[in-house]
Length: 371
Image (cartoon, rainbow, N blue to C red; front, side, top):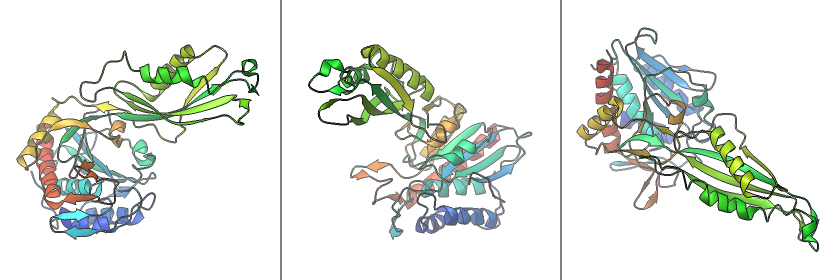
C-alpha cells in the first residue's frame, strides 16, 4: 500500500542536493536540516534527539503495531569533502554512495509506503564514521532492521566486528652489556607473535564470514639503545566473527599470551578506550523472511539480489540480534580500486532508483505480512 504524499519525492534530486553539502566529521548540521526539511515537506514530522539522531516514524504506535521495521543509515562522511559532479548517469562526490545514496533510496521507500497497522521508523545517525555515539544512544525496539550502506544492491546478512587493543609487556631494565640481569620486554615479543599467528588455528570459521583475523599493527618499545627495555607495547586489530564479543576476545587473548611468555614478563591487554561499544560482528539467517523478501525485490528491480556478507564493520551490529541486513546502491570498491572513502566516490543514478524501488516493494510486503 502506497501513501499519497503531499509532494512527489525524487531520490535523485535529493541526492544531488545532499552530495553538495559538506558533512564531513562533526559538520552535519546543514545535512540534517535538509533531511528534516525534506521529511516535513512530505508531511512527516521528524525529531532530533540529544545524540543528534534524526528520527521519524509512520503507522501504529510501538505498543500496538503488528510489526516494526527500521531503516537506518548515516549522514556524516569521511574527510576530505569531494565536490558534487553529475556525469551523465553517474553522481560523483563525497557521500554519493556512503551513505547519501542509500539514504535517498530509503527516504523514497519510507515516504511511499503506508504501514497501516505496522510501524516504520527512519533513524539516521550523525557520526557513524567516527564513534557511533548516535547509534549507541538509539533504543528503537525494532523487529526488523535495514541498514543503508553501498552493497551494489546485494543483501548483506553478516559482517565482521572490529576490536582494537594494546598489549603491554613488562620487563626489568638493565645495562645491555649484562642482558641476563634484566628482563627484555622487546624480546618477549617473539613468543607473542607466534601466538598471534596461531591464535585462531583451532577456531571454526564462520559459514558466511570465514575466519576471524588478528593483525599486529603498531609496536613500540625501549628507551635507550644500550639498555634492556623494560616495556614493549603492541597494538592489535581484531576482525571478529560471531559469537565472539569484545570482552571475550580481550580475556582469551590475554590468557593465551600469559601462557606463551616467560613467567617473569608482565602481561596486560586492554581494549582501546572509547565512549561507545565496539562494532561487533553480526549475522542474520539467510533464510529469514527479511532477507528473502528484500533479495526478491532487488532482483525484480534489476539487481542480482545476491545474499552475502558485508566486508566492512557497520552500525548494524548495534541492532543485532534482531534480524538485520545491510543494503543500498553503490559499492565500496570496483575493478579500478576504492570507491567509498576515495576521491573518486560515485554512485549510479540507475542503481539509486533501483534501490528505492526494491526497498519500497520489500517494505510494502514486510508491513503487510506482519499484520
